[in-house]
Image (cartoon, rainbow, N blue to C red; front, top):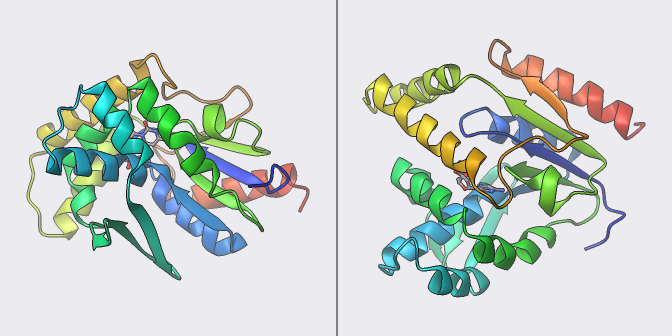
Length: 226
Ligand code: DC
C-alpha cells in the first residue's frame, strides 16, 4: 500500500445508498472498490457456521486474523468467497447483517481487520465504503463523504428493494432492524459510526441517486483538483 494512492472514503449508516454511490464512483474513476461491510459480514457468517458465540472475543479475533476471504471481480460483478465458496447472496441476509454489527463492536476484531482493509489501497485509487473509512482506516484520505438519511426513508428504500425481489416483509420490522443496527453502530465505544471532522455530509433523504452522485463528483473534483 502506498500513502500516495488517493482514497475516497464514503461512510454512513445502513441502507443510505453508500454501495450504489461507491459502485458508481468506482466505475466513473476506474478505481478499486473496498466494500468493508462485506468483510464484517463474511466474518459473521463464518462465526455462525462454526457456532462461535458472537461475544467470544478471543475466537472471533483469531477468526478475523485468518479469515479465508476473497473478492472475485469481473467488471461490476463482484463475488464474495469464503473458503472458495461463493457467499455473495448469503452475506446479504438481515441475520448476517445483524451479527456483523454485533461483532464489529469488538475492538480486537476491528484491529485484526485493519491491515486487510488497508491492503486495498492500490493505484490508481480506492473508493472505500464503510462506517469508519474516513475516521479510522483511511484517516488520511484526501476525500471523505458521509451519507446520512432518516431511518424511515432508509427503511422505505429497503422495503422497495425487497418487494422488487418478491420478498414480502413488514415495514415495521424493517424499520426496527435498521434502528437497532444504527443504535449499535453509532453507540459502540470503538470506531463508532460518525462523520470524520473533515467529511462532506450529504443528507440523501430527499435526493435521487443521480443527485447524490453529482454532488459527490463535484466535491471530489474540487478536492482532488481534477
Ligand atoms: O455496510 P454493511 O451493512 O454491509 O455492514 C454490516 C455491518 O458491519 C454494519 O452494521 C456494521 C459493520 N461495519 C463496521 O462496523 N465497519 C465498517 N467499516 C463496515 C461495516
